[in-house]
Image 1 (tube, rainbow, N blue to C red):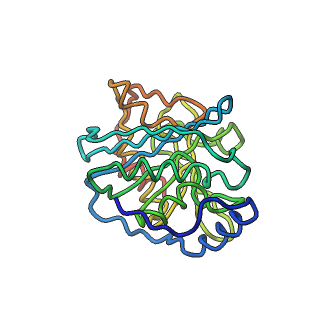
Image 2: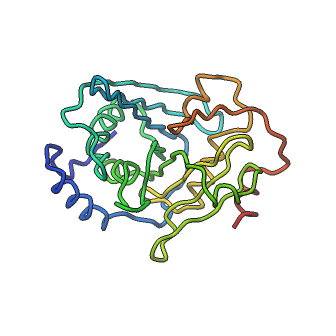
Length: 240
């Protein structure tokens, strides 16, 4: 897939922060998702003992959720993960992995943040701009008052905003497990991101290889069958 070279990668942390601030003005928060045939799931792991990073990109087809392509690349990172500019370490390797795809995804889901403060420019926003593709982020949510108040049924969600921008939401995808943060990355709105999260995470996943695609760190998202009489689309509508 085509990647847009928007800036150099070998920069200092202050330069990276300045680039993030500049690129943040390019983010589109209106929904531009059209027909979705292929969704790319981008995941990243960092080994702090040897300084190596690994990126895995899995391409799923809708509506059958079959893995039609999957690539993993690992390499030694030249710079350690630095606070507030994590995406400058993660994005280059994720981009290299995305470039292995033979098909072009219509939507990308990244482990990590999108427009969530404090930087309001996480890996999901960075990858969205570099690929010019609708993108959103998924990450684990720590225990807290809001998490405890969130409904236990699949599809329950609670919107979060800063300065009148609804940038993310807590979403319950599986009753026994903690909720996850879903955040806008680029060219998508929050409700559409929630909709496709639920479409991509069915209530029953018997294939362990498939279920591993939806594991935002640090907890493992292992889905089991949960009783439900509500479809993903209905759950989103009722929670609005």
